[in-house]
Image 1 (cartoon, one colour):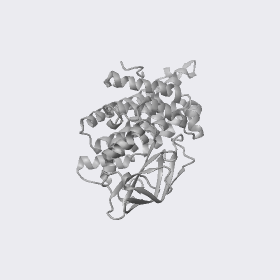
Image 2: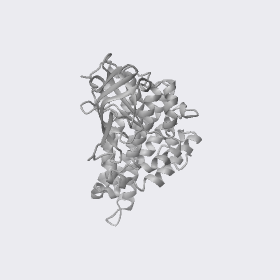
Image 3: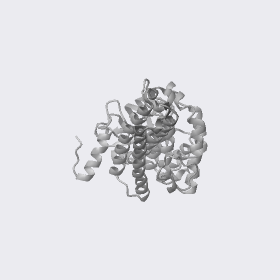
Image 4: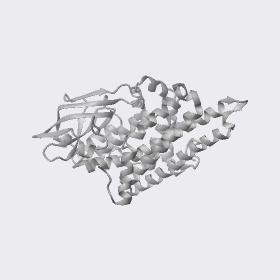
Length: 392
């Protein structure tokens, strides 16, 4: 049996991991239990990111697991998925921080960078000596970003000049390297650039007053004549289809995160119902309470089966846009439903941060929206099954 397998893994999916992968996941679980779980509510309540933990995350050696440039054979998609799940099971904010860095930023460089660029940036990012961010969404552009991208890039000799704005960019306030997507003024192609955080034309302002993922430092970015050398343009990015390929891979990671949120909420609700006394005994003895607990576990278990198969397709090189889109849309919808039941089981105590479940309910709203809304992902699947594109 994999090390310290959670009891909520009813169908024992973790047994599909190799012993070496189980050891990696076990070390992460121990770290999260000791260093993150006791403080997650406090960080969330204060909207304070634990910068001091980045070196500790680096010691786990997980950020570079998907990439051969970081040493060794790339980890399986199954292990990468369970890492995302495990982080979200404790704190969706930290799962998002990790997903932006290791998935979106490093994934963009791995997919769209030249061999020289991959060797220049990925090893240091894998050691978390340099933290990455991914800047695609804009203040006026979300679902329509493929056609409506307004950030521009103009070439001047061996330099590109970027102008525009980005919004909701995780890690951007402290990232060392920000992958910025912009439209070439001459060719109208969407290109990728790696912008250093200290660039004079780059300004990131933290977004305040969030009600979800409060620990994450999301930012508004303004690019004002931001000059980037040609050597820092992602050499293999030749259009939005390359951006979409990165998103296809990270979208499946959000589905794994959604399951982590479900399982975290389930564990909180289960423990609470076993301890909460009403009418002379624990409320877990009541039929209606058990019904909601089993619904929560059923949602998480069925979704875990979906992403397990998705990981197998990804490792086989046969997974497509509709595969990750369906998983993201379905799992995050079930997540929203599941955390609602968890809050219901805690009744009034479910709306105070003291019992943690409120954090899971709020964070679920962000996961439901980012990496493509349910509606957009539904249309991706709809196009695949009907052969007709229904996008406006």
